[in-house]
Image (tube, rainbow, N blue to C red; front, side):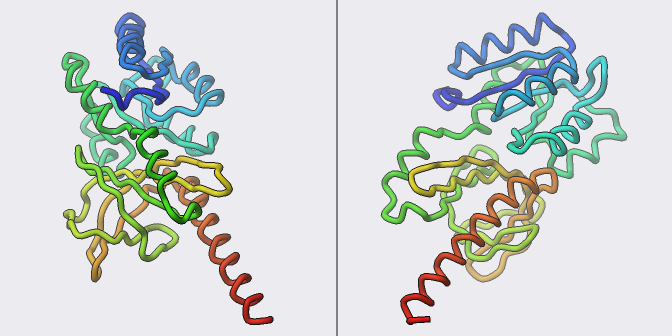
Length: 242
């Protein structure tokens, strides 16, 4: 469970006893963990801290998990990965297919919950080490996680709502995945996560569609790439004497 080290997790549950116990268990695994028993408390914490994962009961006294996701999309810049506890109502099951929730856990199976959360987290120490070993410090490197599988890939084409990734393995359309990318400029490193799903395969790459909830993260990535391209263009113009 080393991957919990350095990650910040928020537990949101109407059951204060269970939620506090889970928070303590996560802290023992190395995470910096917080507890909230309502959407209002969760919003206060989310406004103060950058969380890597939120594990929230579907139903709370003052709302449901999807209301919290919508609030986060509108009010915070760096969005966490959202996971849920319990079972949604039949009418809400379809919302899961929009890729808003990365995984659903049963309160009675704590072992599966800890393993599942660990699989969703990234080993930032290892990732930072890989960045430092790069020859080109401004290069963008993407870590892709699909189920329990983890791989490093490179972008070959970028669109407003998707990215084409250079990869040998092919995933079925609709398969859920999470991208973690780091922007390294002048030794400053920014980590961002973007969930989404796979679409068609073209040539040597496969299309990965961005979850609309994480468009803010995606815009940061697009702006970074646009600025990088402008710098290259300006350099080439100066080199040509223009």
